[in-house]
Length: 381
Image (cartoon, rainbow, N blue to C red; front, side, top):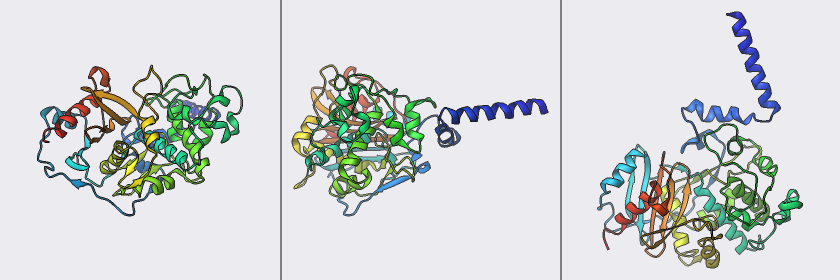
């Protein structure tokens, strides 16, 4: 027994040593945060296990309630979907008034939840603001203007627009259920900037769409340099407060020491406040009389960048439903902000799980939330 115990200790010691030698000690944080909390990947309340920066609310502008507020019931299909997938919040806004609002499983109106990649659309909105303010010249500005690491080879061709359209050509493997990979490392590292800057540009930028959280993170690092402040403060000043957010949100950072926001994910906020970005883009960048974003940037963001990827613009997902234009903010595990611009309808879903599929062939939970949410919104005139 003593011999077995001795070899087990030696084995574990070798494993720990190899982890540090190969610079993958981030997995300890991953194990502690994910597996020891009973999960197998990132989850919607995991912001509690990380350092965060606040996105503060100062002058709330509560949503109006529709005259038929919560008088229309969920369809049987929507009710089943929300219960089966452990939905936390489901919200339908029509003509700037909340028509339907329901919270599940103990979640409440002012409870916050991790956005995951919904944050990518918000980061691209921040890029639009930085261009509007002249802090970034245009979508064509080279990334090498901000980082010396991108002055040679294919990297020298990389622009901020390539990052916003996910066409950087960066070496990146997007995985969510494996401990040892670049996506996990970026989630659990305490120095996110260094992780991103060592990723090579292996293909010619600007040629085709390839989903990559690394693209959004590098875009955020460019923004950070251009605006001269951190992303949380910029989001607070330029969007959160002017749009009258009702609640303070949190943005996960890599560590207190380095203070870099996980820009590709991880803004924890309420369903009501995420909905404001849908409204902002439905209104082509205006919030009341205040022009938050240039309308031309909004319109450009909501058009496909590449013919072979008609479902993605600059930071936003693009679809059709029964001939109607739809654009969305999508996040892991089914975090959705769905907007019908012509009908002025916004649908928000937050929850624990979702089944993936394709809107184009009417499969998956996103299609069902689009379909059932639209039916609910149009049940009355």
